[in-house]
Length: 380
Image 1 (cartoon, rainbow, N blue to C red):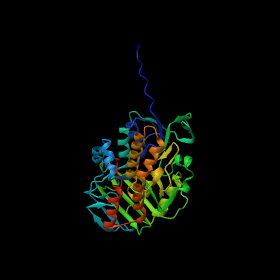
Image 2: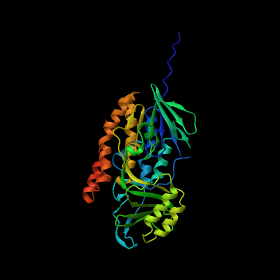
Image 3: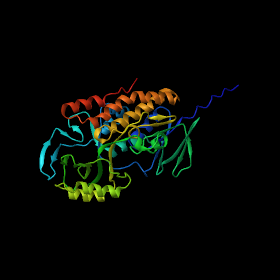
Image 4: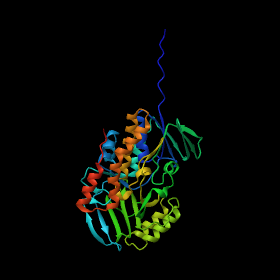
């Protein structure tokens, strides 16, 4: 009699909302652990633009395990230093040892453009991952065997698990955990980023203009000094600035920064014309739990630390790695995996969120960052 081997069980399916750092890294690691991930992203492709971001500590180990560390180092920014100007545009000080955005120039941390990192992650997570661009989740219905997901455009589908990796204004979090205002903590500032041509002729040099912490801007060259990435912002209590209303955002930014000197008028004109303009409040997300049934949150969706921490990208990379590793260990027991994910990530998240709220400067600040960026063991 011929023996027929049983067919292998189909891979468990996971829908990931968001094709940014957390979502792309999670897709890679879920595939590595035998899952079948699908990524849905509202934008028509992986989003371009964004500021320079930092990868530090344990997150460097995650990139290394993905085989991307050398490529990330090759793509890092190449700043020679920075200048700080006052509101009139007069130089207050300069440094050839550090920049405010990236820290010490001789350190092991990597500063690179956000879109350079997402391009690397997307290429690594292409095979074995399904992508649905130009669509978004509209409803989640958990049942005994999975989650029924409704989409804005596609037909409804069932998945074993759903993960929100969709940022500060997460739709998955709103659907599964409740309205955003229950979890967001405003940090007293608004920031916008955009790209323009390098009309300032900057050569590997970062320049800041600041007015007694009320308003500031930072510019630095990228892409072989052919373009400028600009970050502009002002301190303010919440003013109801809708993150989707780019017209009002540009108008408010121009009004709040108009008094700054130097090249500010030209930069504000470029801001109005930039196709990749993005603006949002500096805020954190705090939840008592990041999982509910078959739904989980990772990265900014669950525990945004804000750019003020300098650790948002590292939290996204490490969170994706830990969540996927625990699901891989659990052999389908998502409840136990989610519980271990929360236990392992909570101390790491707490220390990194504190970097943005405790405002420790100097040597004490460097010590706090060193402790925070390594406050997790990737194995075990």
